[in-house]
Image (cartoon, rainbow, N blue to C red; front, side, top):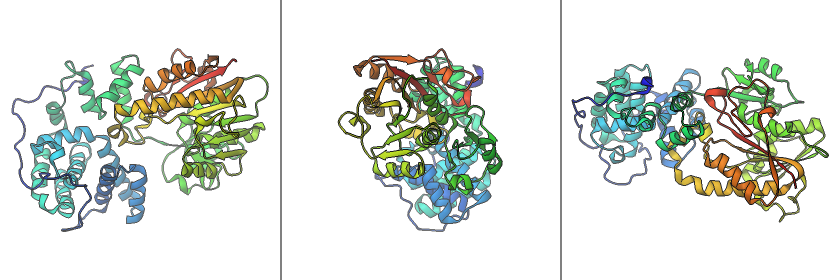
Length: 490
């Protein structure tokens, strides 16, 4: 485990404190004031605007960055550079804040939000990219001059202090010693909050070496996965069209090598959609579970935004089945309708927990039910780098209550002999094993766990002892999807 150990801090102490106007005297919004000289580099400006929107407005980086790039007319290398800076800065935020605080001689909470986000962006360039130090310093000072004019001198001092020390030396200073506090060390070295690392470690049986491999993989930019909708396009043909390659496990998956998926004819014409291979696998597993008797009524209890429903609908069309899709948020229900146009799918904008209280959701009426439950999303941190710093343990109690209630509703909705797949994009034990056990216990019906491993493609490694399955980025190249399949017996 020595490869994860950070040395103890140098005896030289903290860097000197640059003083001045970066001090935050009030609770400012972080909205960038339009004053002073504009920065010279549009890619850095785009990245800054995206990072500021994430922290100021709770925006989602993937959505806001796309809008900013389009609005600024950035394409090609500029767009790629802006994307790297945005995602990299958001991913490494906790470590960057420790380094900025050490260089500034004050906590980052005491730095004005516009200057703070610019310094985070600058520190990322200095420490984690090949941008020359003079360019990172000068461009960051220019950026601060445009968004927080009074803090330009402060930013110059902080950036120069950071630039005088290598990343390894900074990590020696700010990371606790691995032997004394391995979780805290991994947090700094691999950019995840400690509570998330503990949850990952627990799900991996306490193996910190494997946990470290997961954290490393979590920090890699993910490949875009496409889903070829069966009956509409073959995965091999889609791979040829997209200049990609068929997926390793899902028969519907294609890995995109580059380019915007929206430019593909198969995406525009509804023959394929963007979807992580893990999401494809768990939806297909539900439909692969053997059942006796009728197999024509399927239910997606939490359908928005429609990726899994789209795959289910395409398979249903070839098997003579119909899908009822339920989504509580009306705007997401409309997305499901758009995603399943021309498929045997009926969408209802309602709460999935209303099974038995609404004529469109009768009890014991469905042969297969998917519960893709709302969750913390800890399994998709590769794709949503800001989520790791936005989520807290306080999010778990209301989410797990909702998850249990949805699973209980699903077990009421499925007929005896039918199957329910409970799915989350989180490996947290409370959202997976605990929720499934408690939901089954509280449902009031008899259920058996179906071994989910044979429902996945043969040859998949690292599926554990069953009957549930946990997919992992470092094992399978997918989001960390959890799958439990339950058969109602009475």
